[in-house]
Structures are given as C-alpha cells and as structure tokens.
Image (tube, rainbow, N blue to C red; front, side, top):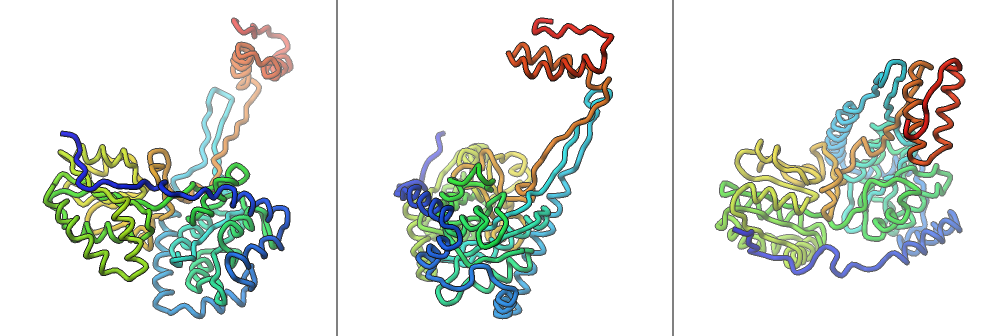
Length: 435
C-alpha cells in the first residue's frame, strides 16, 4: 500500500524565507572595503557591543572564572569525547604510496589547512557545544591558527561558557563579534588575524548566506538550513519517549521539521496525542518554537513495513535519524542517507548534539543524500604526489602523448614528447593520435 500521512506539513523549510542575499552582499562589501572600522561599525549596529573584539588573555581568564565548576566539568567531559572521536577519525586517514607501473610511484598526503574560522551561535541559545565541536576538530586536524567568533551580548560580551569551551578546545583567538561581520572578520583577516582558509559552524540565515556567498574564496563545511530530525519507530517503541524526542528537536526553531515514520498506527496516534501536552509544558520561548514547528512542518507517516520505512527515511535524508525499533543491526546496514544515526532508545539526538563525541554540525534540508557532517576530515586537504624513474616515465609518456593528441591538446602531448626524446634518444615512438 502507499504510505499514508497521518499528519502532513503545511509548510516547507523554505516557506517564507527572506531574501537576505542583498543585505549580506552589502555588509561583506562594506567590510572588505572598510576593514576593521567597518566591522566595528556593524558590530555596534547589530551586536550593540563596543568592547574588545579580540579577547585578551586576561578577558578570557576572567570569563572562564565565571563558569561554575560543575558546568566546567561537563564541558571538559564533552570536549574529551569529541576530541577522542576526532582523533579516531583522523587515524583513518593514512599517507599511502603505490608503484603504479614499475618506476612510477604515486602517493597521497593529508595536509591540514592553515587557518580555520569557527562560528559559534550565541543569540537565542548559547551554543556551548558548537564551540566544542568546531574548535576541537580543527585542533585535532592540526590547523595552525584557530579562530572562534560568537555574538556578544550588550554590556556582557560573549557568554562565559562559550569562551571557556572555545579556550579549552584549543582556540588561538576568541572574538566577540557575530553575524555577517563575524564571518567577514575571519574571512578577510581583520584585527591582525590570518585569513581563514575554511569557515565552519552553524548560524542563522545571514551567517548561512554569508558562507554561501564566500564559498570558493574560502572553504566551508556546508550551507545549513533549519535543523531537522526523523524518527523510525515500530510497535515496540515507547510512545512517550518518541514524542519527547520529537518535541526536543522541534524546539530548535519555528521552521525545524520533525518527522515520525512508523508501521504501527496505534503508536503514531498515541504520539500525536502526547505531543501537544509535552509542548505546552515547555518554557515559553521553547514552547513557541516547538508549537510552530509541530503545527507547520511536522509529519507523521504510516508505512506498510520496515523496508518502506527505510526507503521513506532515505528519501527525506534527515540531518538526525533515530531508530527506535527491533533489529538495530538491520537498520544500520540498510539505511544510507542521514547526517548522524542514533540507534535504539538508549541514545538520542541531544546526546550527539552535546556530549557523546560525534559532531553536531550536520547536513540539513536533504543534503545528507550526498554529504556527511563536520569532521576532522573537513579541515584536511587530501593531496596527491608522484615521482618516477626515466624508465618508469616511458609508458606513461607514450600514453599521455597519444591521448592528448586525440583530445586536441598538442601542448600537453609535447610535454611528453620532449621527455621521451631526451631520455630515450635512440628509440622511435609512434605518438600520433591513432598510433
């Protein structure tokens, strides 16, 4: 039977999106032309902040002293998990050599970028975990200079817990500047800093558009849209746990989609009954976001069996994918499109968002169909090299000359010809395109 929508979204994540391109382009152009002062002007306008942009060691120390010891311990716990996972990821990259033909050796190297710019949101929520996720992975990758920027609060500056998290994670520079102006400061190398080679981290639509605009000039992790989450659940799932997990992700924002895909109608109906009361029990700001997300963007989809459930999930390619169903190994083997996968009731998206070790900077809006999330690998350039003896170069030069002439690239062909003539003057070669 075809899938049945017990609840259908009335909007998509692109509905009502503002056209921010012109605004972002203007700000970036102004800051590139005006340098530090232009960035300071925009910081005063948008951040309502007139303190130091680049925090001094004394300011970092003072901010860290404001963080309660218990929270410090939690941040250190999360940072250690992220660091160890990143180190394990890095170990999967190895430098290799292969003798392609006798006498010609090709190889691979992994080289970290010099400077990484890490954006840490600090508006509606202080994203402590984003400082950990972005800075730690850059540090493990081996970047020479790591910048972290976060929006300051008027009269306060950057949230002390964000400063502490960025500091212990290895940030070389911490900046009190947010939005497009923060992205610009890292990209253009303002305030005496090196220019970033890569920009990473989540942010609002203006930050996302700035990264989109600058991509190519710098590398980026991805262009993020509203966060999204999908739960696959069967008849054995606990409806209250499922409903709580959906609400927990819906609070991200008014346009954050959450989806339940199941083959059990009673479970779906019970979850739909529970969600409104769980939302009503949230604090006001969280409640408003979750209520709008559930009302306008959430879907509940009834499938015939687990294969149809898996196929539906792969079509959605969610940022976060949770499985609360039997035979977790089957799901792990079958599912192919997700940013991060959470298998079983004993784990949940919030674990990955905050402290379990995997990275929470993940592809949204279906991008998980072609890419993964932020990892130590994003900061690494995978480059190749080769060297050859003259005998080793011989068959490669012959093939290169003929292929190049067939393509009409005579200049390429002659770079092979000259080597054959120099290295093997007593030999004759047929290097025509049809040779």
